[in-house]
Amino acid sequence: MRAVDAAHQILQESGQPMPVHDLLDEVAKRVGQDPDARTLAAIYSDINLDVRFTYRAEGLWALRDWAAKGGHAAGAAGRDRPAAVEEADEVEEEDGW
Image (tube, rainbow, N blue to C red; front, side):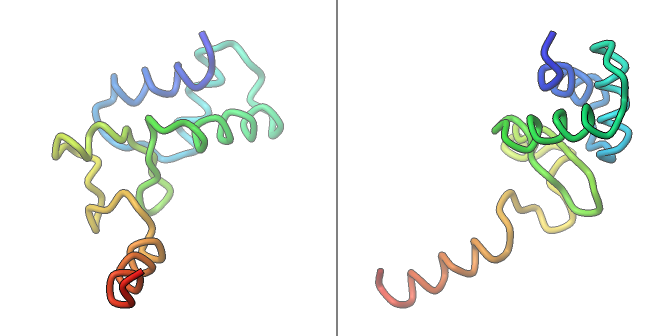
């Protein structure tokens, strides 16, 4: 099993967002990899690039599906996109771009 798929499975099983360090440690354990800095960084990069995941405030990672279904992952602000992206969209709408 790929590490990113293990991360997805772990989050599905937990049913709630997880702190990044806990998630990375559990993924390394599940796929039988040494949890050294290089391995954890590679796993983190894969999670960060995979559209199935979304970062939540305070170092929490969640599944993007939860936000679409109104689940646990709505986060404090309930946003999937950084505020800077939302602000840029608002400016574009005001300027008529």
